[in-house]
Image 1 (cartoon, rainbow, N blue to C red):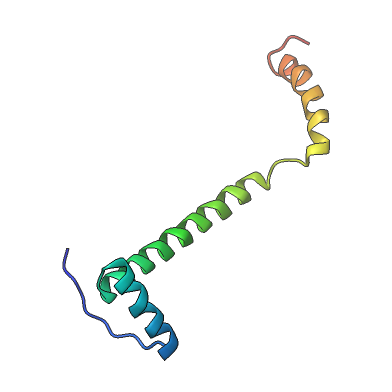
Image 2 (spheres, rainbow, N blue to C red):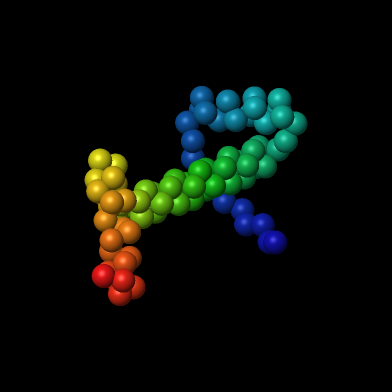
Length: 84
C-alpha cells in the first residue's frame, strides 16, 4: 500500500506527549499517529454498528408487553394454519 505524507498541527504539550510515548514504545512518531488513527476509526465503526443494532431492536415491543405477545402467538399460528 502506498504511503501518503500529511502535515498536522497540534499543540506543543500534546506534541511532547506524543514524542515521549513514541520513545517509550520504540516506534516512530508517524507510526504512533497511524496506530492512534486506526484505533479511532475502529472504535467509530463499532459505535456505528452498535447504533444500527440498537435501532433494529427499537422496533421490539417493551418488555412488559412481551408476555402479551407470547400468549397471542399460539392462537395466531392456529388461525393462520387454518386450525380454527
